[in-house]
Image (cartoon, rainbow, N blue to C red; front, top):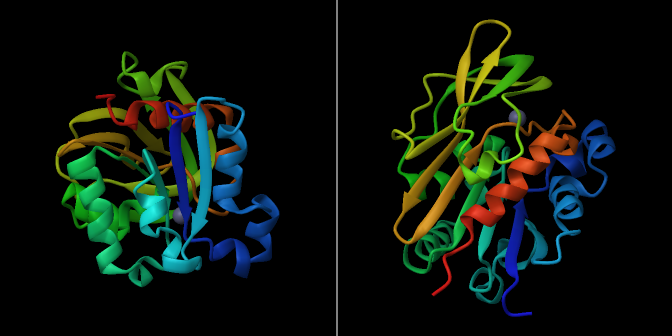
Length: 227
Ligand code: ZN
């Protein structure tokens, strides 16, 4: 089926292997959880890969056959090969591959390189988060209510040292008064990029129906335009 959207979910996949409490939340890994909720969509072809796979999960035959690359990394950003980062950037800029950076991927090499940012932000402990939908006309926010109560999440706060987003879709409130631009898009070269903050590994965030809707919408949005 040549016209399926080919999605590759890349996960560092270290926390789930080394920490029992996280494995209990995501027995198949975060990437496995994401694949499970995307798989029912017949027009998506979802593949999962991880850092410890051969060629860090992204040999040419995988990367060059990916329409949308999703990225979750945290403790091993530095292990990602610089040459791979450049190959990913080229796929986005020259070929229009979509890139969806999830949660702590704000500090990942590919996100920083593609968007042009240090990725730094203000960080604190876990707090109650309410995510506000500030661009309800956007395809990624379709079906998302005015606000989503995410319960306890890891606090990411402003200032977030990103370039001004091309589109700002979500702003989050945290209970100790912090705010954060939790959903941002960028257009880079031929490609589309989405950053989405919820998804700390110790919270079952990727099982939240609204979070799943945002991610699914983002995959369709980020897919390259047809020739
Ligand atoms: Zn986290």
